[in-house]
Image (cartoon, rainbow, N blue to C red; front, side, top):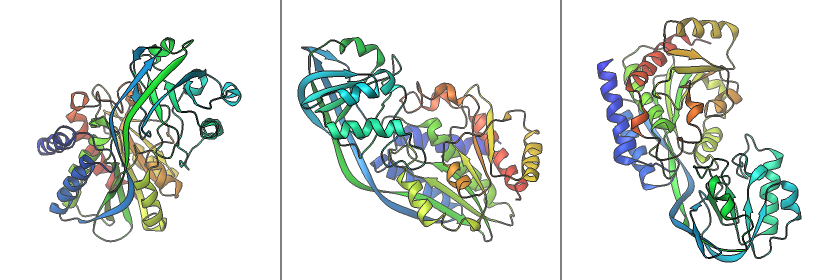
Length: 392
């Protein structure tokens, strides 16, 4: 346990402190990929990088002036640059958006239109019709820019995060809504840049036979060190790879560090689906680790596409771990790639992680101060034992 914990600290400090934000396509992302690939090679795994095209989005700030007064604003992730001035048109429902004349105007969206982040146009896994309608109306009307108002008072939750969106977009905290309502004119400057780039998934294998795949995602949002999301998952897999390299297993081990879970179009996952999941019969079982190791939280697991016998086996094993709790399935995360292909899967995270979803995750607060290394070490041991019990 002491050795495992020491390695976890080393991996987490490298990923989340020395490297920091690891947005897909960025220099930090490449450094993280090189680091993880190097660790896995040193353990004797056969490592390859599964490359794909993406965007390295640069954000050099934003400025909003409303009737001569400055209002705090942030560029929405992947937003186009702009420097525009025009009349403000505020809308809060789809019907108001449909009826609004937005030609040469700046559209302010709030209320029902901003009750949750909108799915990117290219998202194939889940994309509600009302989300598609909002994006379609905005792109057809082509306002000078869009400003979305967060549903949280103190956090500028980005409602539109889409590198394919054709209208410049900024976001403000909910508490600034009153500064825009009933106002007349504004100037918005977004100092952003979309740059073509490449990135890669890390795939490491050892042994032969049907595959046991272990996954986490190595990327982050552009402004966060991503300790829980998902530096901890990567660190756990690197430590687990060391443990399993010394273990006799009847299956082939495959470690996959996805690159793009926090990128708007999930390019790493899509590439893996096309190139690696096209033969699902090659896989015996899948483990996905995302958000594990939160302080003051237990470890949670949920099962997908598991037989009744396998479910009983895994539940019996987990009963030996007082800090492990079974939870209901949640249809988000990289485990759904495998479950969707009919592969038995388990997702491992922190039981209380939902408490951090909006206020901490994807922000600079997701750093090493909220990590419990004891829980991370327990996660490594739990996954190692699951590997022995998971025999579909």
